[in-house]
Amino acid sequence: MHQLETFEFETIICHPPPFCCNYFNYFCDREDYEIQENEIQENEIQENEIQENEIQENGIQENGIQENEIQENEIQENEIHPCYFRTILFGSRIFNTINDIAVYLYKNTPFIKTSLDFISYQCLSVQSCMINQRIEPFEPNWVSIGWLYLDPIEYNYSLRTKMFSNITNESIINDQIKTFTNSILIHNLYFMIHPWLQIKTNFFKNESRYISRTINTFNTFDFSLENKKKKSSVRFLSVEYLHESMEKSISLTIDPAYLYEDNDIFMPSFILHLLEHQSEPFYFGMSYRLHIIDHLVNIIELKSNQYIQLSENSYEICDSRTEYFFEK
Image (cartoon, rainbow, N blue to C red):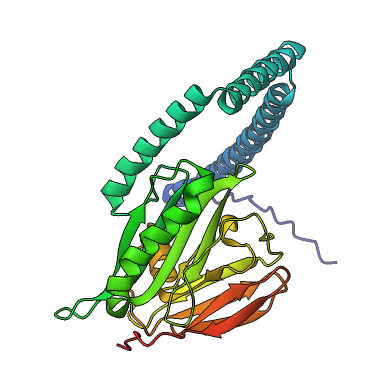
């Protein structure tokens, strides 16, 4: 029989070299370090987001508080305290009382009325001199004859006038007008371009009005001031003066005191009179045009050889019947 042989095994433990252990530990520590850094960065990002959210929430809350404060201040400002209302009411009553007294004294005290009117007129005179603008006389009653003068050298037009203002009595005004007008027209009519008679008077129930007439060889000069002329219902919503030498038009204002029956308006002398009594710069020549809108919203255009004669309820467009017309 065979005898079994027994073998003894020796356990051998292999240890890695020292440098391998160090290398392995290095990588393990590196991974742990990177993980820690990532965690720190994530924590910082989260903290920053939390802080930004808190800042935004605080900003929104502060804006809401500021808006509420502004609204409360506006409400407080808009609220009128009863004392303020009483003060305003009391002040308006005092102002109205003083104004009523001043108007009463102005209308019923001739000295105060004349003094205030004179002071106002002097202030207006100073202003008109500064801006080269003409104004009408201070006297309430006067007669004027105006005509166009053509400068033979510069070939431009100017308005020449003769005025009579010593009219103090209604009973003799007709004779004064006849004497004044005839003395001028007999000697100068053939040297005048578009002569125009203008009378301003307040003898008609203390109501100021104008009498405006064209003058030529076809009409007479006997102008009566009897109170027979009625106020015309015609009104002019817009009157614009245009000339080819001007870039823009000029709006002319017509005094309602002109709008009476049988009055002539918009002749060349009348137009130049209106232009000289306004403040806008202008050029006057016979090639001008007028764009007019009346109270019925009719649009008409007048040239320098046309004018309007008023009646009680309408008007007529007339041609200038004068032989002293020069076209530039």
